[in-house]
Each structure stands twice: as C-alpha cells, then as structure tokens.
Length: 502
Image (tube, rainbow, N blue to C red; front, side, top):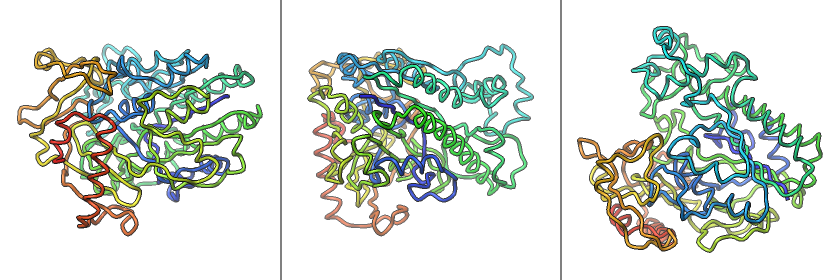
C-alpha cells in the first residue's frame, strides 16, 4: 500500500468548484474530485492548527482538555503505529509551527521529513537591522503596528524569495515530486505532504494576485486581523482577492502533482487523500479568521476527497455521511492493515468509499476555552459558557508548552496533579489553570478570547448560511444529550460539563 496524504492549511470548502464555489477557479481540485470520492459533511474537531493535527494523529478530540500543544507521551500517534508495522512515513511541510515549542513532537514521529523554510512566522533569515521604515511604507498599517514577531519574520523571509520557485509552496511540491521519483515504484509508504498555503499571509506571485482588481491602491494588504470586519470595501475586496490568488496558486501546483501521478501511473496502486485542517472567515458574518469567532460552517465544514484504486469506479461521487478530522487516523491505519488502538474514537472511512452509509450520528468540535459545538448534519448548536471570562478551565498535560513558549513559572506554580485519567492511559497529569488576563478574561495563547458568545441553534436545511438562529427546545435537548455522550466518550473532565451548563 502507498498513500499520498495532501493537506492544505485553511482551504475553504466554498473556494472549491467541486463544492459549489464559483468565485475562484479551481480546475485541478475539481479534476481530482472527478477521480475521487467527495465527502460533503466533513467537519473539524479540535481547533486550530496543532490541536487539529493531534486529532489527526490520535483519532481523538483533545480540545476539551488542552489548548495548543505537542503530542503527549501517552498519545497513540498513527505515524508511530505505522512505523511499528514497518511502513515508511515521510513528511514534507513548510508549516513552521511543527518546529516551535507547541508542535515539536509531531515531525519526530516520521521516518524522515523535509522542512521547507520561509513561511509565515518562520524565523528563517537573520536580518540584524531590518529596514523597518521601508517595511512600514510597503505594508498596510495593520501589518506594521509594532512590527512584532507576528509580521516581521514574514517581511524578512519575503525579501529572500525573489522568484516563484523560491516560495515555500513551490518547494514543497518540488520535494513531493522528488519523493515520488525516488519511491513511487516502492511499496509500503505514507507521504504526508502538508502545504501551509492558503493560510495567511495571502501572498502569491503577481500572475495569480493580479487576476482581480479590488480598486485598492494602498500598500501590501495580505494578512487579515483576527477580529470583526472594519475595513473599507476596497480593503475587504483586496484581502479576499489575495486569498483567491493564493488558492489558485495551490490549485495549479496541485495540478502539477496530479500530472506527475499520471506520468508514473500511480493511480493503479496509490491512495490519494486531499484534506485541510479548518476553513477561514473572509468577511462572512462580519468576521475575519477563526479562533475567537463562532464556529460557523465556513470554518467548521471542510473539504475531504479520497481516491482509492479499488474504488476508482466511484470517482465523481459524493457522500453525505457525517465525518470529521479524527476519522482520518483509523482510515489511514486501515489502509495499511495496521492495528487501531482501543481508545480511538474516529471511524474508519474506507467502507464509505464503496457506498454511502451511516457515519457519526453527531460530532463535537471547538477550541479550548470557547464553545463546545455539536452537529448532527442537519443542525449546528454552539454551546457557550454562561460567562466566558469567568469559567472553570484547566489544561491537562505532561508537555506544558504553548505555541512559541513554555508555560510561565507563575502558571506552573498553580499546577496540581489530576486523578488518573482514562484518556491518558491511566496517568495522572498536570492540571494547570488556564491563563487569565488582568481583567479576568481567559486568554489562551494562540487562541485568544472568544467573542459573540451566545448559545445558538441553526437549521442548516432552511438556513445553510447560519444567519438566523432558531428556537427548538426538543432539538436542543437531543443535541445536548448527544454532546454529553461525546464528552463522556472523550473522557472530558468534570468541570468541562459544568462550564457549559451540562
């Protein structure tokens, strides 16, 4: 068995023609949809980036216990399981979060890995005295305010990518071609190709970015704020156009990968999976981005397509079964006939490649410290704490690191040991209060403080855009019961029920 797993970060479902998108040209994503099985009710689990990848590795939700963090010593990573079965696993990625404190235990699971430098906040090139005044003239004021570590590394890296071939996306794809040339005729491998694009910053070559005219004439504006929309109409259009250009670049390079698979006749014996970790709000619901926003379907309902040579006759078909990110772990293990750990809550999707059938009856998804959301495919229910700034919230971990730093000494001084926890293979864990700001609000590093925290119910059948909440007590009761069951199966701590009034 050979598996090519391609993950683009922040690839919006409604940006893809095969999912009904009509504002971006995606001929190659659409071409792959005609070869593969398309999943229409595929959802996120834990959010954002590294929590989603922990779900992917372990087949379990983690956002009820932990914010952004590494794989834990007690986690059963599918990559480690494959390695134990003699399967070679190779990662290609430009996602720099893997090389920070909060992600440093993921890439080490793989048999080999290729890290492409220069994406987003990657501190790649040393520029001791960066041209700050020039940068302030080049970039929009929202990207130069303070010129802190969020934006400055990107500006420096961009100076060292003069040609399209120098850009991380192009290098990731070139590395994938190299892997296929060297190993395409061998058996027993998983290649995890993970491209950070089209995650912000939305930078692509002029031949993509120049396809649309927003009317905007200011400095570079390619990195939206995680906040409510307050930009001018031209600025909004510029940001959306820059996202569209980057998606079209991803589509073209994905097409080159499909061409390569054609040339080496890989479709006869290779499974190809196309996925993402989450979507992104581009002004819908008057919001940019994710994390602090309600988890509308622009973020939560994500694309998934799977090609399997044994089910090539199903190319171009779709599935209505309710699925989510954690299902990819047991699916990939199943493809290699590898054992699936007992504590996995994800479902093997391979039976769905032959025909549509029952998936999950309901799935839970969310971000640590925010709402616990649940959907049954018909309704979405956002269940928030009564007071978002005054909630009982603890991190359960043996790896006390956030995205770019360890937990503070002051925070660690408050830790206590939990009782033995089943999801941690019976281990006691550090139980650390979630960090609070001076005003008492919970503000988790790389998560932020959730806003618009009203518990609401939407009917996707009558209101697919989730614009008009409904009152339906019998539906709420059913979904809350489903949510209790999901939380129990994922061994949520006692206070997790209390904080959302369950």
